[in-house]
Image 1 (tube, rainbow, N blue to C red):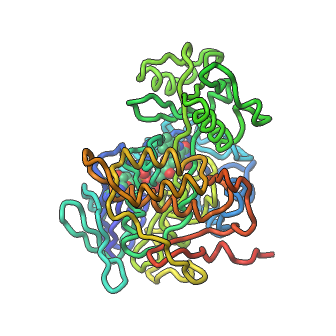
Image 2: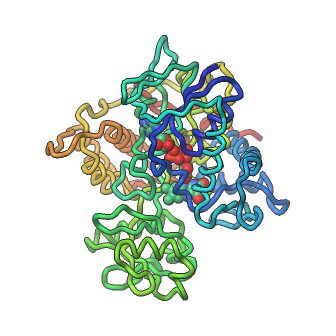
Length: 499
Ligand SMILES: Cc1cc2nc3c(=O)[nH]c(=O)nc-3n(C[C@H](O)[C@H](O)[C@H](O)COP(=O)(O)OP(=O)(O)OC[C@H]3O[C@@H](n4cnc5c(N)ncnc54)[C@H](O)[C@@H]3O)c2cc1C
């Protein structure tokens, strides 16, 4: 069994290590390490590792964050197997901070988040696994970018690279990360523009949960500089959100003011930014000893010429985690035989409509390992019901990325409506750039899919907010999927609840 793994973040690397037990592995990825969101992860990995915690609690917290759409069986796999992943990392020599004593994070009802290297957990994790892959002679590593999947007789049998080279295998695993880079303001790598979505779509695989995008409310936002995540802990320690006149706007909107849930804060900022046509600011000047206590934030602000202890810092909501992806079963198998996916590129159902903090590194490892060990038989019964045909076709004339960024931030971001989404779809389909920049077909397709999924879901839930349908609606308590044949329902999301 020869496996081709595309992508070398946490999910792809972990998958490669486990797939190697079943036969030769080729791991192909961009040579730029910073293109992996894994290396950016600051927080940590969620796993039940103490007797004061339990699998049931981790499941309950995950399902509460997922706002009614988590796949309970997939969540059970995640929480049961996250400690196995942590053990595996330890065996490879990864050292966790405070001898592995977990910390408490928002949304978790017990201490279960493991950190390494302070706020550099992702980089520590990646270093550990890269070392192991480099020492494993069963894994061949190749620099390259996958541009097409090779499908023969309805089965995926390889990938074509931008260089023209073709890599053949008995199965291909997409571990290409998320698609938050379709937004101008995003907290992760610029290159995360939905490569996995585009590859899988072209091969005929179903994608799911595309409307759910998690936005982080406080990304440092200075024109001409990439957005940078400013930790929530700053607000926890008393930093305030103010408008351009220096007025706080959160106390009037939520009893917890600046500490309201992320989506509430993000929407409030977006509204103030639209109403005042000005940025909003994070004022951390009242936080004692802020520069010393928050060295990463201090350095990020200095980079753009601001002093966090004296200046209000311009912030805006930024796309942080892309929940949707290639629809998979519990083994990472997609609706196309021979094609698997794991990590942020996949939609396993563990996050439902919104992700619990620190569950994504755990998901990348748990389902990366499973994809590596998946049975050969194809997945069955992932979709239910007859397809509803697509209203229109994806853009054939791709817009440049900078135009897509503008459309996505404005119309398919934190606050959506029929009018905004139709405007976005119209512009994406018209697809006329001014000719000064090349079109970006992958991002065009991803943005078009997100806009359509968001237009269909006439309710607000988790990472999807519609100002014209501000409440959750029971009729929409299911996950939607789409492939080139039309819109479908994810079968497990309509299963009657077990008693
Ligand atoms: C700022 C930030 C902080 C975060 N903090 C946390 C945290 O504390 N805890 C947590 O659980 N999660 C966190 N996350 C989320 C988490 O980092 C990601 O969800 C996770 O790392 C995704 O891993 P992955 O392997 O699926 O994708 P990635 O790590 O993004 O890797 C994708 C890989 O695919 C490659 N690739 C992409 N397209 C192609 C192509 N066409 N051909 C070849 N290769 C390709 C890329 O180069 C890269 O190697 C954070 C994210 C960000 C942005």
